[in-house]
Amino acid sequence: MSNKTKSVFRNAALLSGLVTQAQLDVAENVLLEDAVTTEGGSEITDEGLADKLVQTKVITRYQADQMLTGRNKLNLGPYLVTDFIGQGGMGQVFKAVHNVMGRECAVKILPVHKSTPEAISNFTREIRTQAKLDHPNLVRAYDAGQDGSVHYLVTEYVPGTDLRRLIRSDGPLTMQQAASVIMQAARGLHHAHESNLIHRDVKPGNILVTPEGIAKVSDLGLAGFMNEGDADPRAGKIVGTADYLSPEQIRNPHEVCNVSDVYSLGCTLYYAITGKVPFPGGTPNSKAQRHLAETPWHPKRFNPDISEEFVEVIADMMEKDPASRIPSAAEVAARLEPWATEIGVSPAPLTKSPWTPPPLPTGAEDSSQDTDSSRVDSEEFDSSRQESGSQWSQGTVSGGTANQETRQLPTRRSARALPPPLPLVRVPRRQRQQQSVVIAIVAAAAALAGLAGGFILRGLF
Image (cartoon, rainbow, N blue to C red; front, side, top):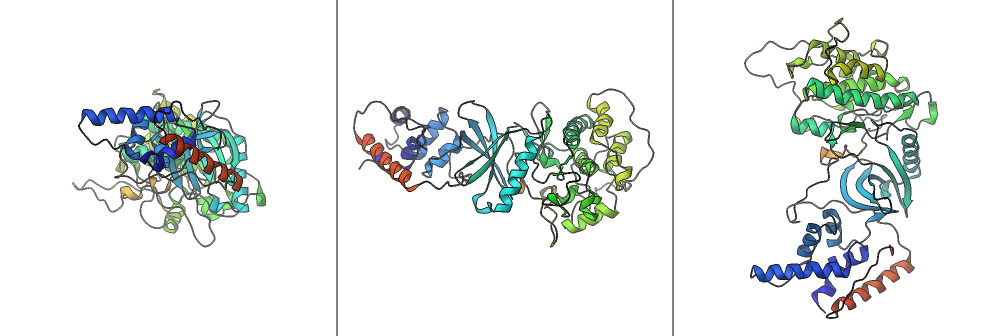
């Protein structure tokens, strides 16, 4: 039996419907010609063949990696998966293309092993919640469905990165940049608030920023409607991320309202302009206590270029008393617009200074209060009576290891970990038998010398 008939990659590639026999033959011939030119060996490996098909854009790097392990199912319903974006506590997100429309999108998957009736109910709730919203500064929901036992949500794909990764990579934003991003996020949140929807997990990782500077709020996995009462499955629970929780979320989660998102957005603005969370270090519980009782370091400690007027906007967003806070996300956007558009309009006058004063210069920066770069976005708040806010999105993943950009992966597999495959979908026994017959036919055909044409198996799976 020839090496071709034993090739895991060749069989998986043909069965996937993404590669024809003719395309395989062309790639093999090119590799053979290259081997002759370089006086190398004539053996064509699966890895070499996969790399050539990626290089010629027949398949993507992610698809090639899956085929190299023998996986051939690379679709969820009508969506062809092209890349892996990220993974978080509640599942995985993939980049995909609709087979007919050709539109790029992000597909969020509820893990099969976590698909309990309660989890499916919450996932369905998230889908329906997101479907109610349509705003240029919110990630839009396109579709939802079920492929076998896998439930998925299809959303707008936002090229770029999330605000957390952007700042960790490039450092704090300027006043204009921070004002622009947070102003846009505030406009998106205001649209949600007009529908009585509270996000409850506003943070840098849930604000996506495109290369053109467009900001979109993502991840409504913890969202809830105002005045929903016990119909909210998270009613009375503290949900969110410890670094960005509003005091009322901690004191009495039943009191959460639109200004709770304003507080979290204020913490996000603080992070955007300083590169630090308001209360660095400590446990989630200690962070919660500091949100209740302490004031953060003055932002000018970390960014001396920002004005006191700008600092006042952050202070007004982060008022611990909800009644004293900026009353709406729309007003937040209005307050930030002068900086975002570079119009020389003076914001509201200074009336207070709630910050911990910056220390006098000593010639050596005191790092005891700084946030370690590996802990900028801390673990989610959790206790015996509280629910973790760990949610993933296009921009939010465990460990901060993935972002919205299509990853430029190396062509060699030895130095990198493979991204996860799509969840397995149970295939009926009759269909598995049909697949075995097809594999046998493909193997026999590949062994025949001079066989012309190719097998187009698209649609079988």
